[in-house]
Length: 82
Image (tube, rainbow, N blue to C red; front, side, top):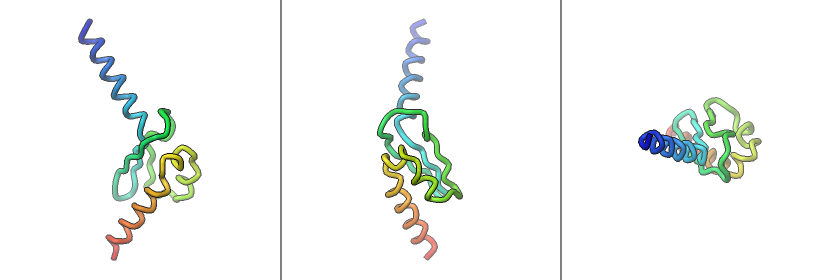
């Protein structure tokens, strides 16, 4: 019984940790942003092939700093193509 409780506590802590971050998958990489609050919304974001405006219209992503992250990804892609 003690092992089950310990495993449940570890699973709950891991779940809480996952819900504290945005995991954004771009075409070339996976980026992690710290969320402003713990919520289920936009924990895993697939940004492959999406328009930047769609990401910039989500308030929780904007508050976490998605705009600067998009700029970093764009500059990295631009450097690699030159």
